[in-house]
Amino acid sequence: MTAGPTASQVDGANGSKKTYAEPNNYYHGLVDIGSNGIRFSISNLQPPTTRVMPTLYQDRAAISLYDAQFTGTTKSPISDQVIKIITKTLVRFKHVCKTYGVPDKNVRVVATEATREAQNSLQFREALELATGWKVELLSKADEGRVGAWGIASSLSEISGLVMDLGGGSTQLSWLVSKAGEVKMAPEPTSLPYGAAALTKRIETAINDQAVEVIKNEMKTRLSDAFTSFQFPEELREAQEKGGLNLYLSGGGFRGFGYLLLAQHQIQPYPVPIINGFSARGHDFCAMACQHIDPVTTRNLSETFRISERRARQIPAVSLLISTLMEVLPKIDSVVFCQGGVREGALYSCLDLGIRKQDPLVVATQPYASPAAPEFIKLMEHALPKSVPIEIRRVVRPLANIMLLHSNVPKESKASCGLHATTTGVLASVHGLTHQTRALLALALCQRWGGEVSDSNLKQRLQQLVGSEMEFWCRYLGAVAGVIGAVYPAGVMIDGEERVRMFGQDVTGEKKKSVGLNIRFIKGDEVTDGLIVGKEVEEVEKVGKKKRCGTFRLKINVVVENDL
Image (cartoon, rainbow, N blue to C red):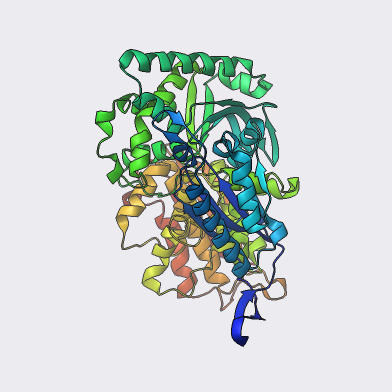
């Protein structure tokens, strides 16, 4: 998706040559000094993929600044030994940035609560600045909440609801509305001292159940006060009155709980191994939390995918926070997990509105688009009847962009490559997608290559995830793309040639509805008058065959005319 760094040579010791990358102003480095760990990343903001902020490099130093300041319940300064270890990790990252070609001016070092509340915060920051030459930005509570909200805004195309960011030492609560790149949030996000590590320590050092109940009542009061202090925009008030609010969660503590939900989802194994964009019903979220408040129920959780021993130990505290939160808040309709954190928030907040409003999936697939992709989009849109769900229409442009990507793959692997493209393939790293979007494009791209895969289990699980109706339309759209790909295999229209037209419509019969698809080719055209194109046309009709459909099925009647 992105070009690698361009190398240059500089003189090293003893006349040796060292190869480093040429400085690239599109490359941005970021150090996030959090409570539970220190995260390093290098991102590429070069057009046309700026919106999805592709990650070139990422790493994490498992250093808990929160734990480093406590011996039991007694708080102490960050030790010289810990400062030395952290300094070394930043010096190493400075070298990594140089090898990638990240200009020093494009590197930000951001510190949050654990640094802010440290007894020797100034000494700690000065040591890092002296060793690296980088200024350490110390975020205030309000700024930390705003950066977290921007990170969540970057995680999906549209957001409307409450947002929470659970760090190690604190949690931030706010509201957020993000649509078409416009981001509105609470002027003053609320920061509360209920981070995953901090709350775990308080609960583990509580002398009895009554002491834990005191903590819960304290949380209930402060969460309630925070919620009632918000001045919600009209659309959130309306949502609250109708079906309930959506709750968007980020931060390591919440993500760990999200992986627990993934591990116990009704679809097993869950087909999308990515936390960003995963959603659950509010009542399922609450029920899971209530089941894991007791530490006894979490003994073996460290064996669960992406849940470390440290995260497993924090699950009871996070569960108590969630159950208390659900008691205090109004009805929560859906809970959505977001990967967006300090890195994403710091970058996304600096992007222009015109970039923020772009569709992440369209942006991510644009580098793979053929010259004729705009015409492919028109053909697909004309082939869709009016009854097609809007979610399917949103897949048209990305599919048109990427439909020729796997042309060079062996025939028996093409459909499988398409099926895996959005979860473990070329689009797995794309930021800003829901799980439904990933599944829809995967199924459509799979069918574009005929739909026959060796791993039918994954295909079935993705079909379960989107439901029978969406799955049907994915196969229909993919089969239409197959016809287009057979007519224009190189993705090129010479001199604007028009070899095919399509028109799809809903047909209402006496008993059942069906789909009518009219395909028109040039009369006597050797390019389209052959076995290859004819086979792809047959595949469109087969989409509606009873044995290929689930609970949702429409018969597809294809009429081919050679009259262009």
